[in-house]
Length: 196
Image (cartoon, rainbow, N blue to C red; front, side, top):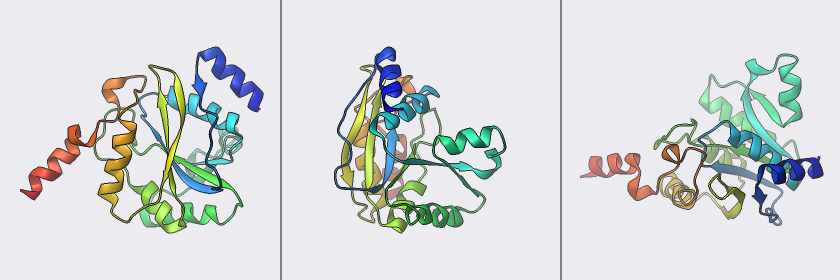
């Protein structure tokens, strides 16, 4: 599958950095920016080239044949999204089931600009006691890869601002919907106004 994925990405004009997380067998991976359905295709192909055992949380209602078989084949894990606390527990438990596993999230939660990120990935990393790896995709230059790991400090606003700062350097397929630097982020502006 690695060779096929590399061939498809090359055909599409993409270059994926060959460096993968070193010495870390379990992590939450935050990928951005997320502005198009193409993100999933390019991203999944990239993970195939790495040979990484990735998992993606998907609502359990989607796991009906034949779609369910496909979702499981690409790393989908059925979860009950009705309870946020229960979801964190379910996801954290997955890390205990494997010797090596990487759980992938797009924290924006939508393909349009969203300054108020979903924070589930962060709480899952804390609960499972695993680092967060930042992964980028840049449609303008057609490059993708990993950055350094982030060990959650417990200061969620500070850590998310750091992730946004890192990912704001890259452009999604529709840049206007991408991630903005924290100083330009509407959510940060709203927060600072509330503090005054």
